[in-house]
Length: 119
Image (tube, rainbow, N blue to C red; front, side):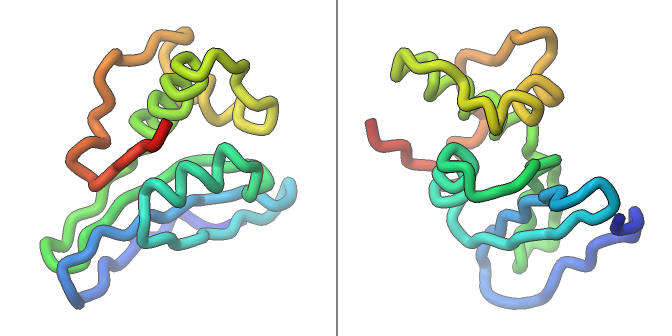
């Protein structure tokens, strides 16, 4: 399992990147980087990760990093609610671990992170 070492935000173009920490076995985690939040959420819903643990965003120009797992879990739950479908089983642990007793905000705070959901 990866240690809790600090992540260094790289210098570069003004771009927000998204990092999914995924458990691939009981003793091993990997970090998968994406440049598009919509694609990240789509891949989570599609089951492209073994056991997602958290999602982090970082900006390469402004040098900030934020754990957005609660926001992503809320967005996934909201999409399922809007579409009238059950939460996918492969995301149940991720969503439940990041949302407080099944309560999620009505408005996603991900809007500022270039999120465009197509219904």
